[in-house]
Image 1: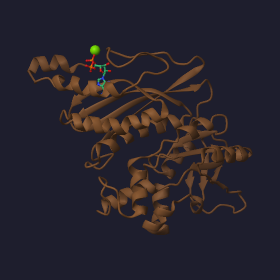
Image 2: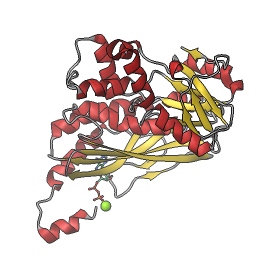
Image 3: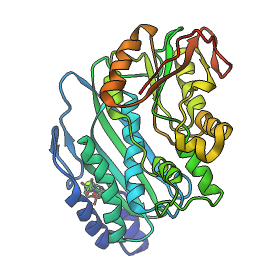
Length: 334
Ligand code: ADP
Ligand code: MG
């Protein structure tokens, strides 16, 4: 950490007295695991990747007031900080392995760090993802994770593999998180406590505790031709596959899966707008040859996860949402 020298030069009192105590609190929650030669505590961690695998590496930062409402509870921030990164690994078809956590905190607040760790490690432990290092500094509230995953050579799900005539699929339901955010902006949602209305509470959970589709990403190895996670909205993120694969994408907006709560709270038109253009759902969007429909039906059944075909790739470019040929074979598995 280069800050040490600058502190000495200008005599800023070190954060470190409390900083080390905070690191110890986090370290106490971390676990050992496969491939960790040396974890938290030295100048760098030492890792041994699996033979025959590539490392998938991703980083995502959440800033208070930008990526989550400032009043969001620390446990929810902890969950989401890791969830957005595991979602990127899922979209590559990679198995979560290890990662680092950079914390910028306005105050050395042990209770805040403990609550943050509750959410963060609940998700980490559920996926066998191990924290192997990080950085702790004083500053505006900001959380940054660098996550490593492993994927067998040649099996990663990239954005550039879609072929003309592939089906376009999405997991789960879309627009729920954007619906919750809209409610919050309209002062209709308190993110700090459960909502009395069950539909609103469902949407609140979808915003605060997104489920990274890790098992789906792994199951799609060898089936999907391309994949992204939906962080910025279906149309925007599918646009990355279209551009990366040099294909067009025709989406039938009426096929986009909407949850009952989203329709109940926002109505059909509002729900559809959130589903097409709202971000933060962290579902997967992927393409697959039509010959893979039965494979996908089996994956859907095994994972208990809805998979919906929402369109087809074309020889054009960009993403369009015109009504498609009704005989195009849309399917939806639950
Ligand atoms: P250095 O000054 O050598 O960079 P630090 O004092 O910043 O080391 O960190 C000491 C150890 O604690 C390192 O192993 C580092 O990876 C780990 N660490 C620091 N902050 C965090 C954090 N927020 N989460 C996990 N590990 C951390
Ligand atoms: Mg060092």
